[in-house]
Every structure is written in structure tokens, then in C-alpha cells.
Length: 159
Image: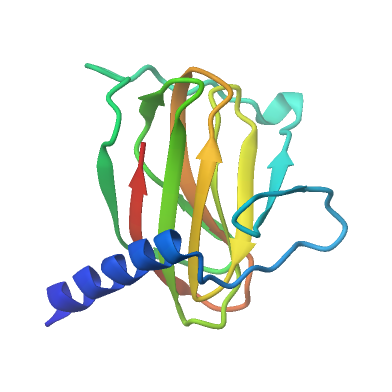
């Protein structure tokens, strides 16, 4: 039953990404870029002391259309969860689609770029966004929970 629920949530996340029926919330005070899908995409630039280069990826790093699951990331308040490192090429996209439980909890969903900067959107319930890539190199997908409760996130990312 649990596997069926995870598959259903992943399918719902993909359907939400394809149909564009997602909640959209914006962080107040940050400037962002309004995207075609209605999300506002923000960029965070880490300070010099926060920049940590990502270790190299072993094997072929520039495969396209690779689908990876996000299998029940349990994220406590004030924390984030990240994918493994993978390589991607400038000009391609990373499509991230997640379902958040509890549904009324707002999270950041984003990517860590090769230079350490983070690009993200915010939302609740179901978030699906396509990040256009402007750098070739190693990436990570992340979900950050700054709400007051622990969340469970499931879904997929495609690069």
C-alpha cells in the first residue's frame, strides 16, 4: 500500500507539472524572476565562506532525460535535503516535481548550481518547475523546509 501511495504521489506531481495546476507563493522581500509557469524563481548567492566546490561525478555525467525519484525525504524544520550530485549541460533543463505533506506547508524547491549558487521556487502541496541551465557542470536538487513542522517530500527530478 505504501509503495502504491508513493507511486500515486509521484504521478500526481508529474501531472501537476504538465498541467500547470500548482500552488505558487512568493517570498516577500526577495527579488525574483517571474517564469512562464507562474512561479517566481529566486537566486541565492552564498558568501565566500559558504562556497564549497562539489566533488566530481564519476562516469558519464551529461546524460539527458534521466529520471530520478525523490523517495520520502523527511525534512525537519530549518533543514534541507539534497539529491546526489549529477552533471548537466548549459542549455538543458532540470525539471523538479514534488508533493509536500502536510499539504499546507510551504517549502523551497530548487537546484544548487556548479558555482554554488542556489535557484529556487516556493510552494505548497504540489510544486513543479523547470529550471533552465546556464552552466555546465555538477548540480544537486534540494528541498528546504523553513516551516514550523517536519515535512515529507516525494516526487521526481529529470535532467
